[in-house]
Length: 380
Image (tube, rainbow, N blue to C red; front, side, top):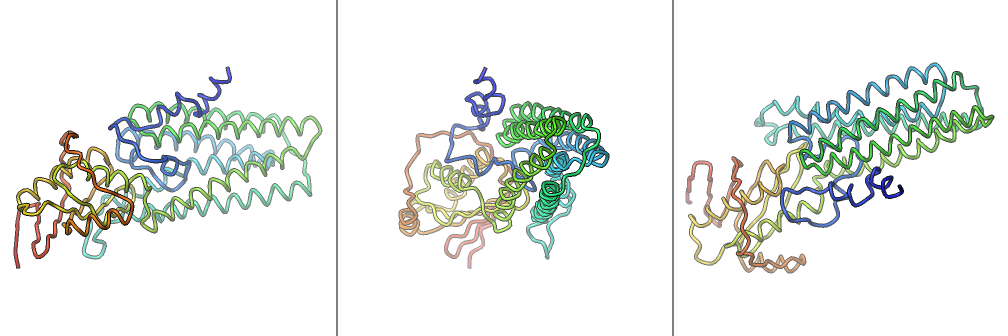
């Protein structure tokens, strides 16, 4: 029974086994940074698939309806615990807002002023959402503390209990929905969000316990539950703030950098790697790297190697939209790799499927500029 409960909450072996991508056999580091319960940041494994977007839309609808029903009960009963839980559910629903805004701006093409497009609008929307949730949490916390010192009568305790049960059911429906679709599209982030929704449902049940406590003659049960939920919301705000501002500062999960380096090392013929850089523009990943080729390598060989590299990275990082490759001196690349604790290994025995896409690439090699879009090779 205990094992079933653990699996149901997503902490068991069954839950974790489903939380990893199975698109390829490589795994680096701890995924906890990339799949936390954050608001205002949309994971690319969700946003780049139609089923993922569909799941987010319906999750928003279900949680929005749940929150609206709870708001009505909050107004009628005056329960501060239910008020805090309602804010919690609104915060969960609000995750869909930056995605919607991002897709509105995604229709706009890059121009001479915004040469990288408008992907950062998603991050700005994320900041606004986190700010609104923070403000709401402060209000809920203030109300809960005020009720501790100035208790007030709560009307219709049965309605508070029913609203808490509705909150639990709404979150459980979203949990089942997200986990099922997440396994369907192999999105660890969506599965993790599903299990978090399940835990959030237990928070709604705490409202029911608060109402029972008040009914048994302990009026402080309601504000105490409100404070507990408020503390949980502050935890989510802190985690979400870190995620949003990391992206605003062009930070990426270290797993992405490791995957870039790993994929480049597995392309036979590349003898060194240097200056790996990556950043998010909305839910699209842009990356750059300098590679070193063997002495005497021709331009044609360079073109073929970068084509193989593009195919490998496309298979391992589906969110990768833009890749810029430059060439560096083999000695410099080797020294820099050792300086940063990364030694290049020859993995010529590894085979990777060719999933070449339409990404554009720019290659600078000394005085040579190579634009492989049209295979032009102008020389100074």
